[in-house]
Length: 113
Length: 114
Image 1: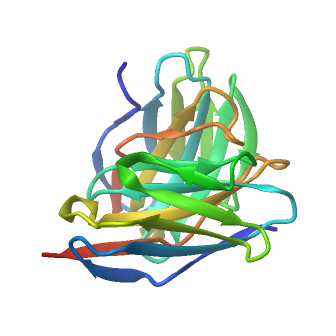
Image 2 (image 1 turned 180 degrees about the horizontal axis):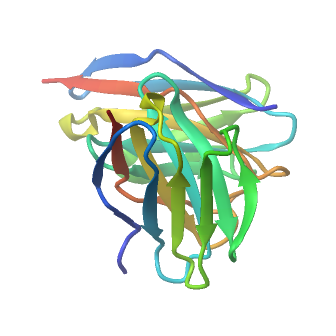
């Protein structure tokens, strides 16, 4: 079985501050890991993905995430938050054998001016 | 290139009715996956279709079914609707089966069951 835990359902940062959204996973096989962003009344947009290549993955809009196998983590970071980053973020794991995806519960990011 | 489209965007039904949702993938994409999103349960995987065949299925009752046509368009059907079926239903398409392939999500269909 696989699972995803996103620590903190709500994260608030000031504009220009570091963004850190935490994701821990469990998977019985080497996982593929994803971060998605969802704006109100919209579908999900892929930010970045890890598929067993480089452990530090760079995505769109200045986001990046580092795969740490020893910590079973895939935290999302951005050096400087922008007001437009306010949204809900989802971490997801795909079991490459079974082909099933599991999403975390999401973290709502608020950016204060 | 047009994105994933879902119709209708909003739907209101009453308990006991059935509903059919439609998803048109990005041109050339052969995999379509469906998800249910609710405030209480979050995003849950319903099923994935690839080349008209269901590849994977999540833990949902048999009231939830789907199909994929030869042009890769997919439909999802929910029979005997329950209040708890109220949710945002998201469709995602990808070139290849979901594992490892980037999925592109549609805007979703908001289903309200009264």
